[in-house]
Image (cartoon, rainbow, N blue to C red; front, side, top):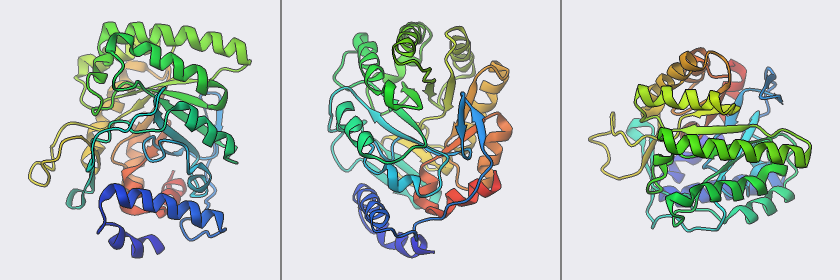
Length: 333
């Protein structure tokens, strides 16, 4: 109710300004003990990745890149939260404006460029948070790191976040870092996953715990590429795959916006679900699929579970529907 009244005012502001103001308000409201932003709903627990999820509805990476709002976001009733993408060094991202709404299509276009304060600042914020639930940390490479050295950035981040993460997501699919999606190609991905898996084994021995690795992939892959990725995930015994990141396709919004960047929201829904179905067929239940992309209703979420996902994540739906979407999904699933 409250968000439905607030949204028209927020949508009059620049999208990024509105994003920052909403998170700051949520943080303040939580600090003051206010609960009008959402309600806690008892969901059905899921045991996935060796972890006990209170419910299967998570927050996707990108909303809280620096882990500044973990406590407040957790109060909305999510079963798990994913922060990031974070890089080894701070980076400003692309020039503003870089975030745009397309209300007619319930879509968001972003060319943020993985703006974040760096992995060390993220860990400072996590240490201060009181959240004891399942926390995913999404890691990437700095934009100015040469592609031939990309693996070094992922290893640097993995080493730092490992003790604090319930699981770690490897982001190789953002369309807003030049060249990043090249890491989805067979030879490059084979090398990257091999190095990361070896590092995971070393860190598991060092810290006495196995922290699952998830790979986040693009919705713009050809069926053959999805098959190759699935084979590599199995060969390297990666724990999970997140399908999907944003799309560069403009299908459904061709006449609504000319802004460049990745598209999320309703136009992504069927595209990401199709990728989930292909992964399900290729993986045969041998590793976990987390479905994300265009979930605007409980029907959308159920479709992704029926396609083969074990868990789902939302982002754009939260912008358009507000916190009530979280409780709606938890109740439905």
